[in-house]
Structure formats: C-alpha cells, structure tokens
Image 1 (spheres, helix red, strand yellow):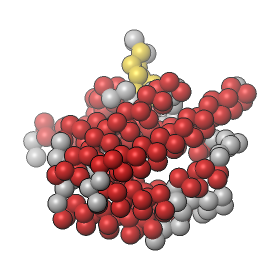
Image 2: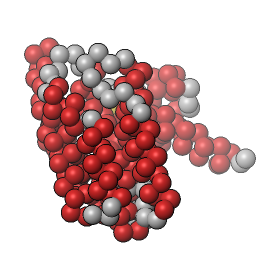
Image 3: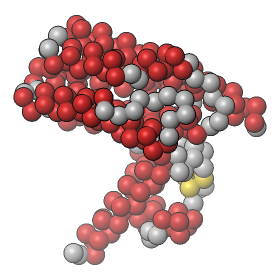
Amino acid sequence: MSEIDKARSQTGEAYRTLRGAIISGELRPGLRLSPAELSARFAFGPTPIREALARLAAENLAVAFEQRGYRVASLSGSELRELLDLRLGFEREAMFRSMREGGADWEAGVISAYHLLSRTEAPHPGIAPAALEDWSRRHDAFHLAIIDGCTAPWLRRFHAMAVEQVERYRVAILRHHGVPVAEARLHRLLSHEEHAALRDAVLSRDTARADAALTAHVGETAEIFAAMFEAYESGLAVAG
C-alpha cells in the first residue's frame, strides 16, 4: 500500500470512528473537538483527525468555528421536527418503490426481519439494557428491510442520513434521567402487532394501507419523541 493509500485509509478510519462516537453520544452535543485531544483519545494522527472533522462538518455532525476548531453539532427542537418529517418522507417513498420493485428476495427479507423482531422482548419499564439494545437493532433492521427493495441509491442515502441524525436525539433523550414517557402510547407503537400490520400491508402491495400504517406508526412516534425532547430541553435548562 502506498503512502497516499495509507493516509486515505487512516482518514477513513478516523472519520468512521468519530462519526460513530458523535451519533452514539460518546462525544456529546456542543463538545469542543480538539484535534490533539481526539488524536490521543482515539489513536489517530492529527492530520487524519482534522480531515475527518472537515467531513463531519459537511454532514452537519460537527460545526467549524473561525480560528477555534470544531464542536459537536448541538441539538434543537426545530431541527428534530424537521428531521422526523424528512425521515418519514424518505421512508414512505422508499417503501413505495420497494413495493413496486421488490421481488421474492425482498419479501423474504421483510418476513425474516419481522420474525426476528417478533421473537424479541418488546421495550417496557424495567427491561434490561441488553434486551433493549437487541430489540432496537432488530427494530431498525425491520424498517430497513421494508425499504430494501428500493433501488434508488440517493433516496436510500438521504434516508440513512436522516435516521442517523435522529439517532443522536434518541440517545441524548434516553441518557437524560427524568424524561417522562407516555408509556401506554409508546408500548402500543412499539408492539409486535403494529409492525405485523405494516408487514402485511407491504407484502400485499397495498399502497394505501401501507401508507396509512407507516404514516400513523412513524408519525405518532415522532410526536411522542418531540415531546420527550422538549422535556429533555426543560430538564437541561433547570439543571443549568
């Protein structure tokens, strides 16, 4: 491998590492991103770190300050609402395309993803962290399976970007203690019955029924999520 290829590889690894740390909340919103500190913390050279930060700024995960380096992008209620709307729009269109374009392999993927989700303990008060993580992974896999028949790469990319940005909010909210949750509503939305209805509508290629199921499911989840973030912001203001 040439020196140029090695440099590109290191920059790519640094970018993926920092990106994951921001989305997971390891690097919290508003945190100053010092190349020297990040280099020591993640064992990358200063140059790959700086190049990675520039890429993250282009994705709105980091913010550049004149002569002062970078910070992790902050969170805001207005941005969350916009992201939730975009996520639903992208997912609806990708689902419609999947229903038109998807074949037997796509159908099998939807069935398999739902089966794994249905065999997983649904979130509830007191659920073990490992079980919650397992459910979250399979829940995301089910929603991705629904749009996996879509062959439009840019639509898939925009959807993934919206989902990852929203994930930053989910992590921030759930890591902050004292955020009230409408447990009955949330439990119903996350139940296997709601996902089974979405699965059946999609596999039947019934556009109207699938649209109604996805819009109601994601829309109400977004409403609860936005309310939780408002409570999260209020809690931060009180703590501050």
